[in-house]
Structure formats: C-alpha cells, structure tokens
Length: 129
Image 1: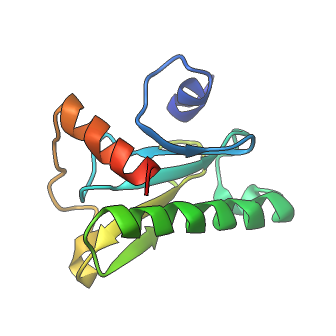
Image 2: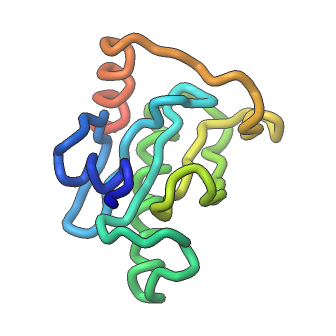
C-alpha cells in the first residue's frame, strides 16, 4: 500500500509544495510545530532513511540544504533545525523546522494550525525565497 507521501507525489493528495525536482519533493507539514515546518522526501518510497542508497541519500541532503536556505530567507528564525524520526509515516523524510531555541524542535509540543490561505502564503514565501 502506498504511503501518504507517495499519494502526494502522485497527485492523489494535495500538498503545499515548496520545492521539487525529479528525485525529491519538499512540502509544508500539515501538523507543523513551527511556521514554515517543511518535509523533504525522496520520490522513491523507502521506509527508513538509512536504507536509501548512498548516492541518493547524499543528493537528498543537498536538496534539503537548498530548501533550508529558502526557509531561512523566508521565515524569521535563527536556524533551521533538522530532525529525522521516521516513525510517523513509512516513507523516509527529513523535517526542516525554523527554530530560535533548542526547545522549538520538540515534537511533543502542540501542533500549530494555519488556514489554507495562510499555508498558501507560507508556501509561496518559501518557494520564492
């Protein structure tokens, strides 16, 4: 069965896409812990990030770096924090989270909620950064 992320890749589910190329996709997390919280995924469905072939994994981190720099330019923050947890969805992904303090990347904190218009604005701001 396809993961929710594969369904996003295939256009079966909507997403606020901030960057995309032939191998990777970056889109806003729908349950963000910070404004601009973005997920980076490979278009190839692999459950565990360390099962990704080495060359593709290296390319994924370079893609994530480009997205993180866009986020830094678009969302006021000191840094973009990185987390790879891998338990929520059986499709490898990198969380890019704008942070100002170490505690800002705590996934047990309440999730934020934005309107569709706000999500589109955040997506456009990052995409165009």
